[in-house]
Amino acid sequence: MPGDAEPDKTKGDMKSFSRRRILSAGSVLAATAVVGLPAPALLRGEQRGSASKLKVVVTGGHPGDPEYGCGGTISRLTELGHEAVLLYLNQGEPVESPALMTGHRMEEAKKACEILKARPAHVGQIDGNAVVDRSHYAQFLEILEKEKPNAVFTHWPIDNHADHRATSMLVYDAWLHMQKKFSLFYYEVSNGEDTQQFTPSDYVDISASEPKKRLACYAHASQAPERYYALQDAVARWRGIESGRTRAEAFVRHVQSPRFALPV
Image 1 (tube, rainbow, N blue to C red):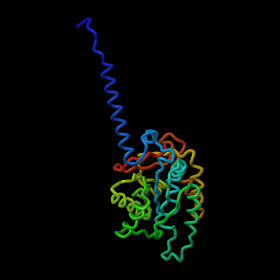
Image 2: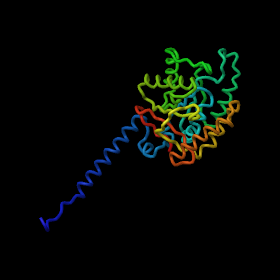
Image 3: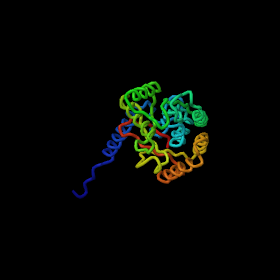
Image 4: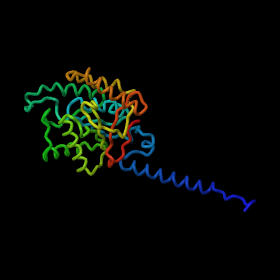
C-alpha cells in the first residue's frame, strides 16, 4: 500500500553473504586438508615457510626433459623452500650395458639440478628402448611410493617420443595404484614438434626464473641447447601471451587430482 515502509532486505542479504563466505571458506579448508596445505597458502596460490614444505617429483624420459618443460616452475618451487626431485626414465645413453655408459649425460643432469636446487635420480631404463610392462609398472610404483610426493609432473601422453609416452603411462599407473593421493600435472616440451594437442589448465609465471631455467637447460651442453632452448622459449613466450605474463610454463592438471597450489 502507498505510504507503507518497504521491508529491510539488508539483514537477509547479510545472512546470505555470510552463508556464502562460510561455505566458500569450508571448501578451501577441505581442499587444503587433502594436500596438507595451510588455508592461507591455497588462497594466495603459493606456499611459504618451512611449515608448508612440500615435495614435487618431475619425471622425464631423458636428462633435460624436466628442465626444458618445467625448469622455471621447479626454480620457483625450490626458492619457496619446497623439495624437488628430477626423475629421469633413463640416463640418456642408448646402450644396454651399464659398463658401456659414459655417465656424461647424468653429469650434465647433476649440474642442471644444482642450478635448480633439485635432486637428480633415474629409473634405469635404456634411451630409445623404453619398456612398459607389469614389472616396470611395479618398479616405478615402488620409486614413487618411497618418494611420497605431493605432486608429480610428467610428459603429456600424446608426445612424439616413445620414451615420453612410456614415462607418462608409468606415472599414471602409479597414480592410480597410490589412490590418486598426489596431484598429477602434465607438461609440454617443444610444443608442435613433440607435444601435440596440449590445452593448458594452469600457468606459472616464469618471467623472473627464466634465467635459471636457461642455465639449467644449457648445462645439457651435449644436446644442442642453442636449438632446443630457442624452441622451448618460444613456447614459454606464447604461454606468457596467453596468461598475461612475459613468459609462462603451462600445465594440464588431471581433473581428479587433489589440488596443489602452483606459484602464480
